[in-house]
Length: 231
Ligand SMILES: C[S@@+](CC[C@H](N)C(=O)[O-])C[C@H]1O[C@@H](n2cnc3c(N)ncnc32)[C@H](O)[C@@H]1O
Image 1: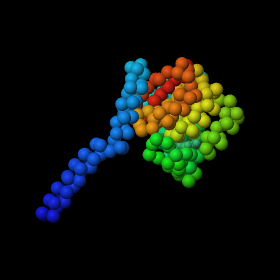
Image 2: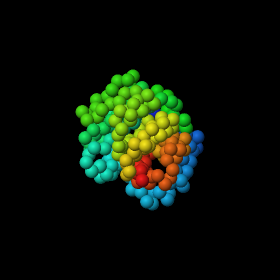
Image 3: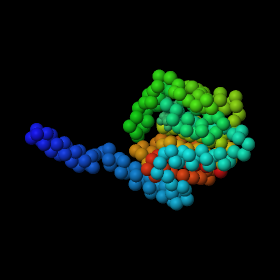
Image 4: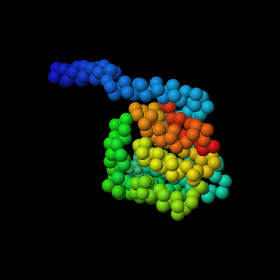
């Protein structure tokens, strides 16, 4: 009984010390800074966008917004970064077909400014269970995307970009840009609101598109997703 009481007190003390130390750690300061930076950077865009607090809500909004712009159902829907397929399967419920690009070998490069390294999300090339209207395109996009675009000459209406790192996202945006429909929706899974945001998907967006080529349409204020619409 007394032993248990000591254990309990020790656990409370441990939690308290952890809480105090965490409050002044590099980790927490990095996160606090990125929150402030992002608020300052995007505060005007928040006023003209739809705000969400849940990932699945902003994803639903993104795909529904895209569909509104697809009058004969002939446009293309793409996801880059599939992993175990949960987002591909989600989007697939709204469209006739979605092309899902992934190497299934994890991140192609270290995620600079964040806490993940090359190979994170590796599934050893095993393709996950995907709905029948999800067509996997297997390989690094640097090796698959050009062929896909050349072969299909697609008019692309929707892209879910979820490869996390700057080099892969920039490569994809550069290649996809000429094929985007007017009004196409791009949902970025990690555009902002995390440590290193300026050096990830956001940097790729800024380098490939001028600010007058798109509008911000939605933000997840408790997550990292941002939806843009091509003008
Ligand atoms: C964060 S996961 C995707 C998660 C998924 N969209 C979801 O919400 O469940 C990132 C995925 O991107 C893939 N990936 C990263 N860089 C890639 C590249 N250059 N080419 C193809 N796939 C890549 C990884 O293999 C990994 O499966």
